[in-house]
Image: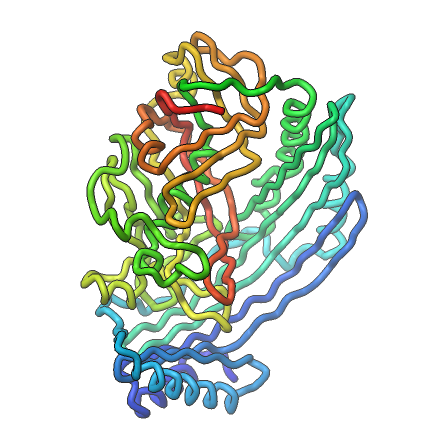
Length: 473
């Protein structure tokens, strides 16, 4: 099987001649390396190669999907095209019909830049950097690092997408990520910090991440929680949240409930539903509640300029100054709603079909400084880092627990407190925001969705935000 569009065009024509009103072929390759270091020892080094062709067809209102590994060659791909047609015909017997909304489709080649190519540094040197990072960690007196896992991941993703209605997209996307998990014990208690950094580009990202410094800072946060912090305050008070908190809120309480397939109930069995299935429009928060999902941010972990259906990407406003705005759509859900797709179709690999996904979701920044947010708080709490979050199946009720947090007294940070929790509804949370700082910051994540599960790279972010009069426990 060749890496060129002509072969995919042949498969698309084959499905169209078999009766498909829409046909799509995607040649999809992911080649990568993973290194895991635990407590200063290398426990895993593995290379990944997942390559194949994915095919979709719509016949008589039924959608069929099939795939074939690259190793099966031309015959395997042609056989998969036949299976996609057969599956679509079987699905057409359902009373629910599927169509693909018309879209402005791209014909382009996109190569994400990498200043230091991923393969220009040896595996041994990459391992050495992880081992040095572990050796550089020092636990303050009274704190014991019980377990430290550092996971380095790199991948080069290549795709060619051809559709029967004119899309032709070729992409080359290198990504680098570092995950770590630190468990510490002190003061008779145990706490854990899990963190991920990731972006699109080459090995220059490792220096940009400054992950060694980030790990050291998290060890200090664990020490604050376990050795210095007092029990949390309780009651109704003002709360200032860091970009780390506003980022997870943007992803979980705005991004997921804005996925159109979830709103339609198609994710109910795997990942829940959305309050936007019954709250179709109206107010969700204050004027500072603007949440955007933008795949086009250069260097972002969720970067793409065309989605996996060939639709040009753009920024999508999910909440706009306190009001519900766009849903995230692929071409299938766009047809249901009678709108154009906003390029939210993403597939993890060739074995997966494109479904509605986020990319880089964030709360829009305001014009305050962090100090100005604090100035107007007589008594409250600042949550700098979280160690736990929970959210219900419709993305309405949620809870966030701080790892590192501080009392605010008369506009200044005071003593640290541990395990500060806020529990509130999505509307209460976004309605309570009365100010946002200008310090927009992003954090990497691997977003899970689908059955079989599709973990994909995303960013989530925001500025410091201030919530007025919320319940703290």
